[in-house]
Length: 233
Image 1 (tube, rainbow, N blue to C red):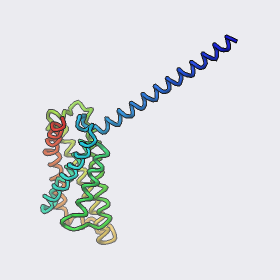
Image 2 (spheres, rainbow, N blue to C red; image 1 turned 90 degrees about the vertical axis):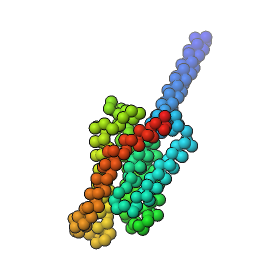
Image 3 (spheres, rainbow, N blue to C red; image 1 turned 180 degrees about the horizontal axis):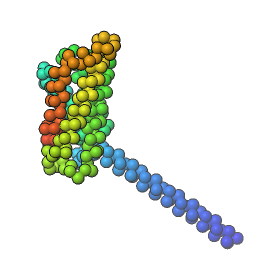
Image 4 (cartoon, rainbow, N blue to C red; image 1 turned 135 degrees about the horizontal axis):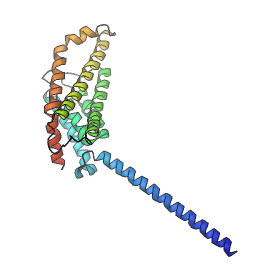
């Protein structure tokens, strides 16, 4: 009888230990998940970005900054820092915030555009494009943060970084110009047959847009990233 009791006691102790180990594993996984979430949210490892209220304020500031820049330069054809400022917001704050900054900024500007509201298909694409621009900023930061040549607290005006930023700026701008032209020609003519002539008719403005954004990403973006890093640290 005593042997049975001992076996039963050992079994209960074994179950208890197994249950405690399982809880420890779950707690460890939960802690790791929380750490990963915090790591993703605190994109540039700043104590300020751990504060939820500060993140909301910073997101609002990036959105307002983007919209204000868009209005200031609206009278100059195809010269804009709207794309750059949205990209910067995503770069500093992360994926979710980058998408929100891009979407909100585009939503505000396209519906209150001083040149008038664009057709719905064009508006839809513009909002999507700028949401992806904010996301691209965050993904670029994720790509760079482990690189040996990336030192945001020191000097970002290095050839690899300037070349990368310039290439990304050019790619974002070319995709915007091509797709908006495709949508525009379909809206105007109901077919893509006139696309080449339609695109070539605005080639001067398109070229100015692409050169301007590329130069902005090369020469202005690195300095702004360094400035924001210093402010957050």
